[in-house]
Image (cartoon, rainbow, N blue to C red; front, side):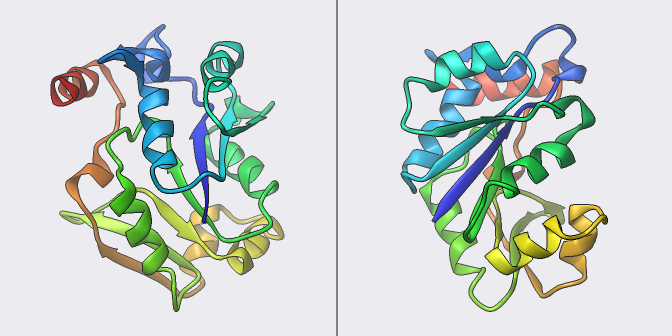
Length: 184
């Protein structure tokens, strides 16, 4: 199944640092996310934006398709729509700043998509990643002016029990330090 990774954000809460390009354990956060996705699929698309040249320079070392979102400053919704506009199939979507997803997380997302249009893990009441979307839902999202989350809520979707790693992301210096400790 195809995987889309959103890696276009401004990293505003990190100050002047692009969190995805921080080296942890010899690889950037972006690389950790890509490598983990590659453990499940060889059909991966990464959406870039902020500091695209630096991100794309790293990504050229991996067998992924790269798409630039020229409207990345408009937020995650614009990057998600950019990704979905290049999607002709079911897709699993995740964020590049969720670096601990493993093959089993992608498998669970796909398995929980069977009888619904969207599937998302929940851990301790918090919605996590990755999020699986059926092609039919992608088409509905792209034809709507509503926010993606609102379109998903209107159609059959599944929240399933996920692993703690599905909610661990990097938002600020404190979460970065915790992730660095975890990756050591």
